[in-house]
Image: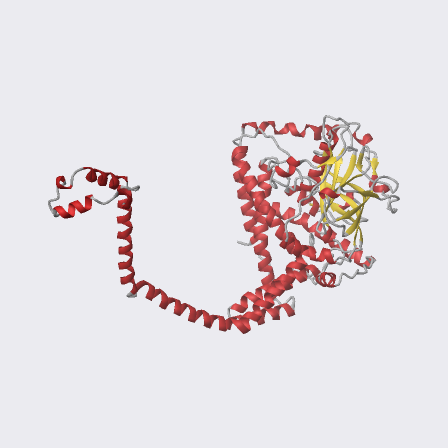
Length: 634
């Protein structure tokens, strides 16, 4: 059975179990209540009149007139600034109406930007399904950053004028500053997520997000299977990162973060009701639907989420197996001749010396990470000759640039994207999105048995709420009356807890999220591999010789220690000491203070010596014993 067949069978089995369990829930007939808002929105006769603001057609691409400087209280962010980040929120949209916005109107949208303790909020766009901010509106922010490993968070909210209700979050995105090239200006769409479900991942993967591609036509559709059912849309940002030292501190930050203590992320808020509402919005922007620094797996319970996490875990594990298989096939098929020859040399040199195999594994891992940063493909597109990812779509901080930055910090000159590169990236993004839609169709066919998988041939004072940082309780709680929650919620938390480190490892391996960390890992693998190779070639034989003599001498010592004649005398001495300890312990237990001996001597001193019965001693000896003065007693 192939990996695709195995994945489809395993997912179908899990869904069958969950459907059987959910059928036991007597409250399942109430689930249609949650769709009332979507139904009202669909049949609302005024719906087309209220959603008149289509900002995507009127995007203002002029440079922003004013950049608002976002200030942070230095008491909660010690350290000197190392760089400047400029962020412009141009446009947002592309989310589905189900579960988003009001029932009878479009969304009143605003964007929340959080970076290294600073918070910026754009102006509100009323009744905007696709909000767009003009150059003279509040949309541009400038941050001075202290942490070179900081992450830029952007969240879109639907403003609620009712003071008793909180603003509705639409989606969020996170961009690591280390994933951007220094001194380069980016203008790109970033996908938004809300709950990180399987449907949201499918929607983001099935949309070709290119700067000049309209969101309405960017989504793919294969055989009537629309991929945007659970879409949370995207946001268009302009971002530029400038490092004061040319990027040297940023390039070293991955290693310093590993060796040093983790830095807490403090965000200050006004001590008002509005400040508490802002705190909740910032929490969503930074951590998602329900997570917080103290509970990374906090989220609402549902059978669908359990199924999504199980599917993702299956995809990750089987994807790792499939990736390893594809890697071996690529080496065997000589898709990269130099790498295949390296694998041959590694195999031949490791036959006579097994220690070299470990060194070669580290070196090959370093080379693979270097290829990842360079945009070299090992997937199906590599078989077709498209083995290089377009420059726009590859990691923005390759290995050579990282080495230069960590050595000299020289400010690299970023060349603008050419029209050929842009068209290549656009074509690649469109192809990736279409492949997702086609794979969705094939997945349904496999589940229904229509097709079988064939194996591939080759204002007030800002304060920090101490409860948020000292308490280990979640910052947000969810309630559910689901009868199966006590039984399946631990399973849901366990699956999400397993997925979080796997997602981090996958991001580290791909190099897109944090190429600095990937380059640092590649350099570490290279150093370990070279050191291990030096050891295996020059030192390993001597170490094995010394270890052989050491174990031989150790066995001699163990034998003499166990069966040598010294044990006879040691046992005798031990028995003698043991009996002496027993005698002293018996005397101490009988008369620990010596009072009994004194009383006996006083008694015999008070009577004449002739009256003392001494059947075994002479009278003279008894008198001598009885006449001992009291002052000489011990």
